[in-house]
Length: 221
Image (cartoon, rainbow, N blue to C red; front, side, top):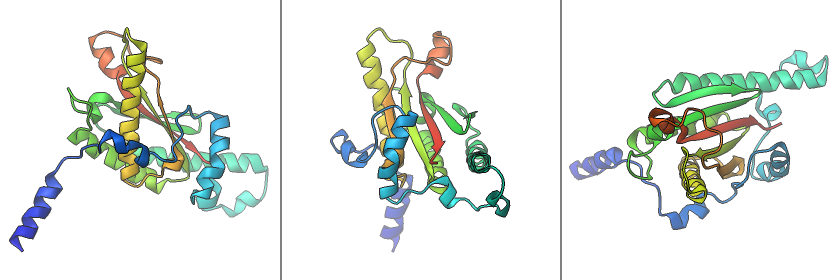
């Protein structure tokens, strides 16, 4: 009994470690390695639905009043309400350094600065990252009528190929984590954008901010 308790205690204290890279394709099977454009979402929707995925309309509690009036306006209101609930859940749970939740139209964007999710000097999920990504995984599983684009970014680097590879590694590493914790890969788009789209100056502090992973969450219509 004591030995069993000790084993459970040690297991509970063990930090997360990404599986061997050779297995990543297994964990990410079903994910799309492309930008989450409207065309890509339309193409992915039958695959998503074929694996049990549902649209926002299928999971939302329909207001009886929505049977009347303009259909497009009613559907738009439904998407806004669903995504507003998701945004609030993420915002309340992620009030931590290096994390931010933003609205972009109907979509919700979560910005994860690299230092908030990964080891300082190693390409590995940190203890804080395990906690942060675990929280995100739980919320994504609850609000599962959504597509998720996982995009990695770096600071300015001379070698653009290295920057893209580094940013893709971050995005894939996060994708593997979410997959292992129950987020369906049929929802995922994974890309590495290198040093594109900086959100801060390329000075000492800004470079730390530009090294990041962004989760763009979009409703399945």
